[in-house]
Structures are given as structure tokens and as C-alpha cells.
Image 1: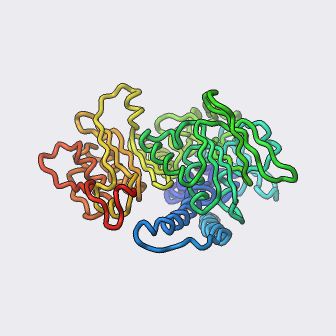
Image 2 (image 1 turned 180 degrees about the horizontal axis):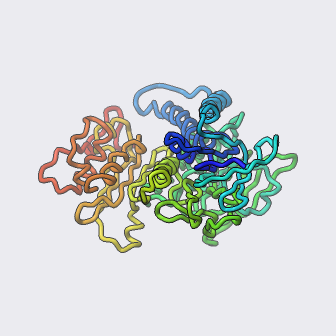
Length: 487
């Protein structure tokens, strides 16, 4: 049996715990059955955003005429795009694997790990070569991530379908694509394929796409995605059937509230984007005292330790914040607690996230609906992007910054919709995570002119206690060459 000070199951964010332990002179091991780096590098965040960048370029070409630039989208070299992105992200995964293999103090086991008892893990080699090895750790970190969820739809077992894992590296662009799921994964992929010219149909059970976002943000994205896709919001896929000879797929969608008639949607390809499920079922946790909830997520205390003393968990299997940056943050908490016995607790109050549709959405803190449900007193302001001159210049007509604050000025939430939203949200995160976390912390510092950050500035200035203001407001001006009526 191989024995280590710390064993990490999962080669994504969790592997950082192993390398930190090795830097302390401890013996560490990482068990991973797939590409190193986790789903984000090869099957999620990075390749999907690389694809969406191409969609943004195509969309900019189509919109060029609005700004007096004559341009046509001649062709999309789809296979070349996906090949290039595939090669880039898998080279990154390969480099991470080589780094671990070459490490003198981190052992890499390529295979699937399953518990034999509380402290022992049997590792079955990925390629079925060699014997199963047993690995034992004084401390164990569970970081095995998640995988796409396949919903119970009648007829699905007889139909060819894609998941988000499959959809990123297709050799050919589909002519017609039906997407089941209206969350952030479905919305991002719907935008990508639609912007490149695929006829996309999206089926979402809620009345709006990305229903977990603030209502104002989800409304804008729903309206925008209607320009790229045929939307069937308020519908749920009930049955699917494949045409003869493996041809097109027909999806029967029924109203989510049982009020209305079913619709039939036909497409060349079917993509399921109905969420993700934790990979805890691969671990044989029944051999341990680790506890999971009804959905399979590992239950931990605030320090991310499980019910089994010395076994920790982070990332998607915890289920609190299903984002790579959240997993990295949780890895830091686990490092501090395992290596320094710091007693550090997680705090998700200023945990941001972003959705890379057109327009982008970025959020931190509470939504207005959540505050209303909690009966919490708050103040709100919403400022459009064209209050900032650069927002006006870019034609970000549907963009806005929404700020939610307590009467004493504490920032409760912020929601940004528009160009570079994923970057703009960061100064709000910093304000919430340090200092007093008030609207003045964002409104007081000087902001670059003319930059999109002035939209953030103007929104927070609206709720600020400042006596004097120099925040810009260009909402009464139409940009040269474009008219308010045309917009």
C-alpha cells in the first residue's frame, strides 16, 4: 500500500492542495482519471469562452453597419476553430500532467479512486493496464467535480444527443440544433451556435432564460437571445424521437404550467443543457462516514471538513457555488485548514459569477427577488450603460448596472448586464470583500474617463451619501450616426 500525508481525489482545483502540501515537505498524491486541470480547462469554462469569443467576433461583423462600417460575414471555418481550441486546452492539461509526473513530492495516479475504508482508496487504472493499487492518506481531499445531468425524457434512450461536454468540439457546425435547458450553460451555447448561423431552438421550463439571475438581468438576456434562437420558454421537453436511419430528432415540449398546447420541434442535433450532477457516486462513499444530501452533494462544515474527520471536500461536489473560481477559493480554505490548522471558514457573501451571453451578465450578492422574499429593507437603483459615454459609443443599448443596498449603505448585491460585465463586477467584489463594503467604497474612488467603469460609478453614486457628484450622464444624447428611434 502507498501511504501519503495527503491524498487528493481530483486533478482540478484540488490538486493545488497537493502541491501546497509538497511545498511544505509533505508527501502528497493526486488521483485523476481524466485530463488534468478539471472540467474547466478541457470541458467547460475555457473552451466555451474561446468559442464564444468567435461568436462575439461574428456578431460584431453583423452589427458593423450600425456604426457606418460595411462588412459581411463570408464564412465560418468551424472545424478549424474547434480544432485550434481543442489543441490549446488539451496542451494545457498535458503540461499540468507533466508537471505532476516530474514532481519528486507529488505522486500522480491515473485512474478512478474508490474508497475501501475511511482512509484507503483503491485506484483502478484508467486504461485498465496494471493492477489496482491502494493508496492511504492521513488527510484526504475530495474534489472530483461534476458531470452533465441527463434528465428523464421519454424516448431519450433511443435518441442520439449531445451534452455540454460533447458540444464544444464538434467537427461540423449543426444546421439545426435544439437545446433543452434555459440556464447559463444552455444560454451560452445557444448564443454561440446562433451567432455563428445555426438555427437554434431553446426549450426552458421557466418563463425566462437564466431564471436564477436577478429578474431584470434574465429579462434582458431572454430578449437578446430571441435574436439568435427560437425560444420556447415556459416549456418542458416531454418526449423525443429519432427519425428513420438516425435522421433528425423531434422533441415534444409541453407547457410547464399545463396551460396550453404541446409543441413539436425538429432539429438535426439535440443538446441537453439541464444542469450538472456531482461525481460523488464514483467514490463508494458508503465505505466511509462522509455524508451527502439528497442530490449527492457532500455535506461539510464551514471549514469544508466532512462528517469524517480528516476528509475534506471542495468544488462542484460541495454544490454551494458551482464555479471554477469558487473551487479555487475553497482550495485555499482547505489548504489553510489542513496545512496550518487555521480554522478558516468559507464566506460566499462576495462570490461573483458571470454568464457570457450577448450581453454579458455578472452578479454578486443578493438579487432583488431574494431580498423581497426575505422581507429585507433595501434601496435600489438601475443605471443604463449609456449613462457612461463609452457605453453610448459601443451601442450597449440594453446594458445596465443595478445596485441593491441597505439603508445604511451596505452593498447587498450588484448586477451588471452589458459589455465586459464579467470584468466590471470586480471592483464591487473588492468593495464588498474588504473595508466597510458600502456604496461609498465604490463611488468615492476616481474612475477612468471615458471607460465602462463609469457606468458602475454612476450607479453607485446614485445611492451614495456624497454631498457633491461629478458622475457622468449621457443618457440624453444619441451617438453620431445612430438614432434613438432606430435603436
